[in-house]
Image 1: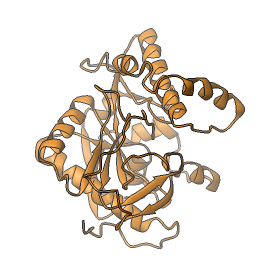
Image 2 (image 1 turned 90 degrees about the vertical axis):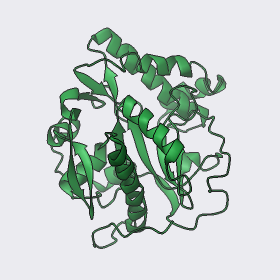
Image 3 (image 1 turned 30 degrees about the vertical axis):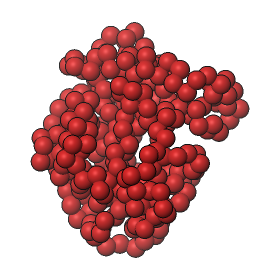
Image 4 (image 1 turned 60 degrees about the vertical axis):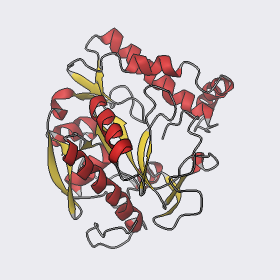
Length: 295
């Protein structure tokens, strides 16, 4: 696939401009597919922050994340698998029904993006945009904690399945025995607990299948009822209508620039090629998506 030049001109200070342009081409395709079929999405986390603070990528960011509600993801999945551009893109599916790969990603065929802890696995390793599911969170505090704990179980079990080495002794003590259990142990049950309120209107949405903890992964549903377009490099992408309120709840002073140590901690890739990846990255390869991956 020939990539369009979608990045605003700037110094390639962090060495990511080519990668960011590749990611943005994937995001532009997602936006068009969603627009053509009435599917809602919005930028989340650092990608939403980049849209507000930098009018594009945070200069040192090496990924792009979006939110979809469960019903929008299911519609996106169906449309992509029936009439989407599968020659150029590969959908790594969120495993709500079969419990396969946990995190959804739309990947670019013919590209290469390796995360250190996934390097040896037989999964599609193309450059990607993350698609995270924004779940309804029970208003009842006990049900909320139940949902949160099963979400964290999925995260920890996924890390254990791929022999992830955590910082600190305690984390590794927890991970090791979980790695001895079958890969899909309680996974399907856990996913059902997360989806229990999927069709209910609640005061809060949540995303607990990432790095954010109990408080940081909880959002007012009113912030996401509508979306709006903001400039993102040379194109426009959707953010929550109340994006400033969302960012303030997530980070506080979100306009402050983090330290170099924080920046490096949140980067993902250890190796990438935007175009012309090694053999085996094409859409016809059958990838072994049975590791319950988180990432």
